[in-house]
Every structure is written in structure tokens, then in C-alpha cells.
Length: 475
Image 1 (cartoon, rainbow, N blue to C red):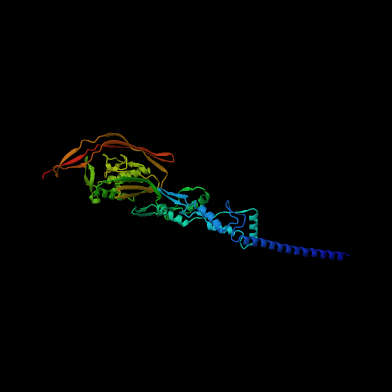
Image 2 (image 1 turned 45 degrees about the vertical axis):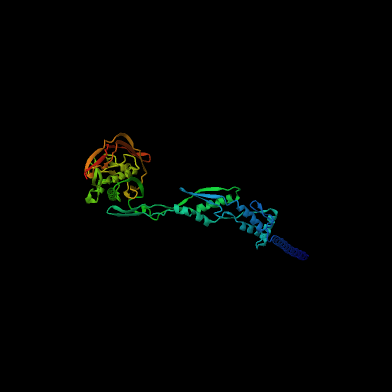
């Protein structure tokens, strides 16, 4: 009896299972059929149009054709082209319009994307999209155009202007003197990636704005590092410039210019060891025609006359200025007895140094703990001399005050001297008047708040008379 009931129950279960399976199969077939009908209906009905419920940003484009959508966004583009970017690098400015960069809505791509919604090869995906679009609506983001090649073309003048090639350091020592030196220098190049990002980020603002907009941008650069730095190329601890002095010699006669370059070459490349006292006279040596100098005007016996080595004090004056700037202890310095016009070219009065081998010298002590390299840049074209001190900064700062003229005295009456070599009636000025003056300036050198040097320099210049040669030669 129990066995019969079990068999009957099993038959009923199998019958129910079969019925359920067939029902599910039938339901699935019906669902797929219905889904297919819906897909086919929408794809046929909207084969060349957008399905209902599609927005592009805030614009409803459902049931529109490609041409209709394209027209909408081409019209929008007409109001975009006058927006612009103003790029600035130092004193150079250029304004580029959005039209130049082909910025605007990509009307063709927008229309193709909109019409293609719900028409992929995936039936289930299509059904979901169509249903969601019909019931809730779907919003698409607009596409836009931007010609990066055009941006690159417009930036080319800025690239050329801003580019600087990195410079590798050179350092060659012979007989304890540096005969070849160039400091390493960083290079630079425009940061193209940042510039493109700046433009990209502002395109949505431009295309969605109802007004023309201008964006100003200070063009950024990237630092290019040299392969060989100054500190890597030498064993003297020399890394950077620590001081500089400049003077001009405009109006000098050719022999004086030659002497300046000749004397500067004696100092160029000198290495001053830690705790060493540098002596100008030691390196300049004998000043005469025998050591390569030419005749130029010098001050001697209260007169300006031709003498060997005229112009050497231009070199000592320039070096003195570099010593001041570097914050080094200056152990010997002498001012000129008279004011010299060359030393007041683009410089206040009073910052000069005279030498006279072997008794009057110019000296400083290297208390930086590292070697100091003295480098000369003699520029006869611009008639400028520059001394640069290279070493390792220990953080000291040198502040030189503006010189103050404490007192002045007028030049003496001009002196007229007969000259039998000049024709009668000819007058030639051979010396120029200069007032006397007492001048004072101070220098304070500090490091981390500690005062290392606090000193006053005083220069006393005697007045200088003008001298004229008067011709007495007959016939």
C-alpha cells in the first residue's frame, strides 16, 4: 500500500516538473519573441532617427535625424569661434581664437552617436537601453573638436623663445690654475602637457557659454637638468657662483683695452685654497713691456701720462667689487688718489681699488672652507669686465651701502702749457678736471643672523685740474 502511494506521488511530481519546464520554455520563447518584436519595431521605426527619450546635455534629440542634430550643433559652433586664449611668456603675448584651434561641438560625431543608441548587436543591451530611454530618458554628453597640431603651431614662437639648452660643466686644471671652466646651467622647455590640459579643461566652458570668453595663461616651463653638474666635475667643492664684480671702460684707447684683457687673463682661473690669502700683485707680476703690456695713460706725479700697463687698475677695481659681493674678508685695499671716470661708469663713486707693484696690493682671505675659483669675462665689444667667484655658499649675505659723499672740493684752475709740436692756434686738452671728494660706504656681512663683517670704507680723492696743450709751432 505504501509503495503504491509513493509511486503515485512520484508520478505527480514528474508531471508538475514537466509542466513547469514547458511553461518556462514557452514563457521564454514568448519573452524573446516579444523582445525581438520590440527591438525590430524600434530599429525599423527609428532606423535613421534617434530613439525616443534621448537627450544631449539639456537638448532633447529623440526622434531627430542626423541632419537635424548636425544642424543644431553647427549653429552653436557659430557662437564659439570668437572665444580666445591669451598666452604670455615674459614680455611676449599672443592671442589665439577658439576658431584657430578648431574648438567646437563635433556635430557629426554627436549625431552619429545619438542615432546609434540602442542599435548594437547585443539584443538584451538594446532592449534595456530602449526601455530605459522610453521610461526614464537617457542623457548623452556632447563631443567636441580640438586641433592639438594647431595649438602646437601657434606655440612655436614661444617654444623658440623659451627654450634653453642645458649646459654641462667643464673644469680642467693645469699647474694649479683652471684653464677651462664653464658652470653647469639648467635648461628649460615649455610644458606642453600642462598647456594642453589648460586648454582642454576650458573647452566645456567655452562651448556651453552664451558669451565669448578669454582665458589668460602664463606659459609654464619644465627645467632640463644638465648631464654633468659643476659639483660633479671637480674635487674642489666648487658648486655655484658666490660673488660678482663688474666695471666698464667705454672710451678707453686700444692700448688700455689690451692691457685690461692681458691683466685679467693673469687672474682668470686662479684657485684660492681654504684659509689662503689671495694677493693681486702675486698673480699680476711685473707690469712692463717685458711682461706683455703696452703704453696707455696712467696717473703719475699728479699728471696723466703714457706709461706701461695703463688700465691694470680697472682689473683690481673690478676684482674688489667681486670681493665685496662675495662677503669675503678684505685684508688690504687702497683707493685711488684721484677720481677716475672709468670707475664711475654705471657705478657710484668710491668703489675702486688701486695697486702698485710691489708695495700697494689688493688682498682677501678665503674663509669659506672650500676652494674659490676666480673667473674673468673680458668683453672688449661692450667694453665690460666681469669677475665671478665660484665656490660653495655657506649662507653668508653681503650688503654694501650706497656710497655717501661727505665733502667735495672743486677742481683747480686749468693749466695751459706751450707745446712746440702743435701748430700755433691749436689747443688740445690732455687732462680733464675732476672734483675732489671724501666718500664713504659700509659693508655688512651676515650668516644666519650672525654679523661676520661690519666695516666702513673711506676714499679720499684729491681735486684734479684740466690741462691744455697750446701750440707754438710756426709755419
